[in-house]
Image 1 (cartoon, rainbow, N blue to C red):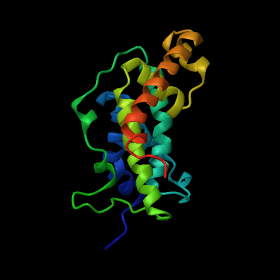
Image 2 (image 1 turned 30 degrees about the horizontal axis):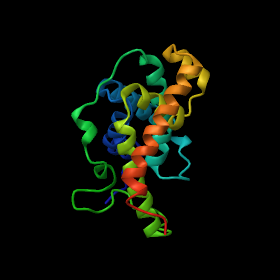
Image 3 (image 1 turned 180 degrees about the horizontal axis):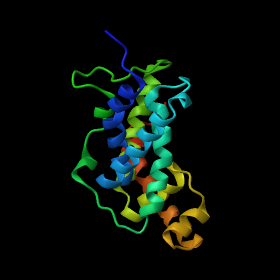
Image 4 (image 1 turned 120 degrees about the vertical axis):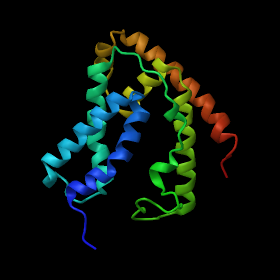
Length: 188
């Protein structure tokens, strides 16, 4: 059996990248554009992949920047949740038979890793429950790491308004995490 070429490996990961982009953008056309730009960037400079991480991790790093670009281009359009939002994220990690798509390189402390995975699932669900604008601002600030001036300029809001909405988002996340995680998993 021959090893797939770099281009084949990248194309094989396209569905995973698309699901990831859809979770962030909630717009199929924008997500497809961001993934296409990611794949193109990877294929234009395959030498940039030094193999210090998994190919999927490297591609998601590129995709993250493309998502920021996509948000900047389309920031004034309203997005709505799609039926795909409720889709189980396990599909990104596991095959239908329950085996890893890509096994972790170092298992470290499996119990702690499992708790972290469960926590991330709860956190993602809590972020999804945030009202549209709050969720979007929170993701732009905390996940995409855009600075205040950039967010305010792109969304035509004042810094004070941004900080109030971020504060409200954090309060809602705290409440959601308290009931969805901390009450169910008290510190030992």
